[in-house]
Amino acid sequence: MTRHAARIIFHADLDAFYASVEQLDNPELRGMPVVVGGSPEHRGVVTAASYEARAFGIHSAMPMSRALRLCPHAVRVSPRFDRYGEMSRRVMAIFRSFTPLVEPLSLDEAFLDVTDAAPGMAAAEALARDLRRRVRDETGLTVSIGVAANKSVAKIASDRGKPDGLTVVLPGGETAFLAPLPIRALWGVGPRTEQGLQRAGIRTVGDLARLKLADAARLLGSRGEFLHAMARGIDEREIVTDWERKSVGAETTFAHDLGDGPELRAILRDLAADVARRLARTGFAARTVSLKLRYADFKTISRQSSVEAPVVDAAAIERIAGALLDRVAGGQQQFRLLGIHCSKLVDRAEAQPPLPLEISEC
DNA sequence: TCTGGGGTCCTAGGACCC
DNA sequence: TCTGGGGTCCTAGGACCC
Image 1 (tube, rainbow, N blue to C red):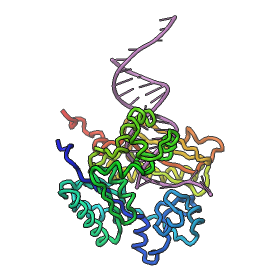
Image 2 (image 1 turned 90 degrees about the vertical axis):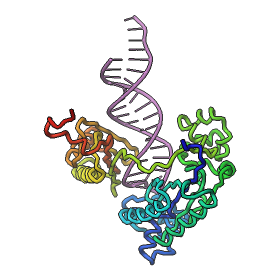
Image 3 (image 1 turned 135 degrees about the vertical axis):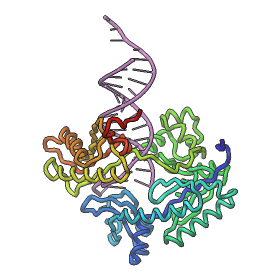
Image 4 (image 1 turned 30 degrees about the vertical axis):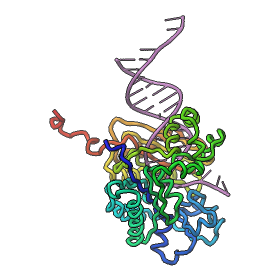
């Protein structure tokens, strides 16, 4: 058992990643407010904003229409996920040259366990500087790093140092570092949880840390114990280098609301093809197909159907999703979004029934 | 202001089985 | 007539993250 040994964890986070890649690839965009995301005519939102754009109050998930009102001379760029994926792989390869214990969280973020690579915090800080330099030299991107004894503190530390920062929280300094931060700084505390906690008078991480465990559990339910520990700088989670995929999906928001009809059914067909393609790429078959619909008033519903024989092809997915759509799409309802998701994934090779019965295992 | 698209995890109720 | 308890699977919705 090595769990009692002190660990050193990095959280590395590329700064304004998508926007930075666009500025890197297109020098005219450097120094300009850049927003990556769908067009306002297609009801797009901001996927990423350069720091020049953030100065105008623009942030990710903001409706693009509002972003462009806040900064009319901002340059909007449609996302190019293939390109971001390519850059991400290069950066992750640099991370892995420092330690094999790398846990990517998304294209632009990862945890690294550098306990074995760095004997002590001073060495870890030097390693972090080295890592930042290499990412900058080899890709032109800047990365913020948080260094701490566990994941949660490292992640919050990297957030604080952005952009282009290095923040070290020494072992023992966790609670002092965390206490003044707003409760939202904790991973897993979103708008709803924040609201609930604020009603109880809890505004900072320190407020939560001072709570009795039983009170935290009462306020936060099953997540109480975990969040209470994180508020006190305690997080025993290990780095997970290989995640198992649980679902594959595709969805799209229409430029204009749509009723049921040939146009909606054609989109359903395209989505089924898209999901089938991704299923094939990941090597899975699915036992559950679900349909997601968003009405014009933004109310969102889903319907799902599970089958005995896992599905792989677009036609089968379309047939199941189409039957689900038949169940709900009557009358004059208008929709703004349609999606198909596949879950209960099984290995594609195992999904195919063995053709000759005599080969079945004995 | 008018709300994307890719995911993960949790809850709660109901069906069904023993 | 009044009514178990544990387990598993399925479905729908919602919070949250990037």
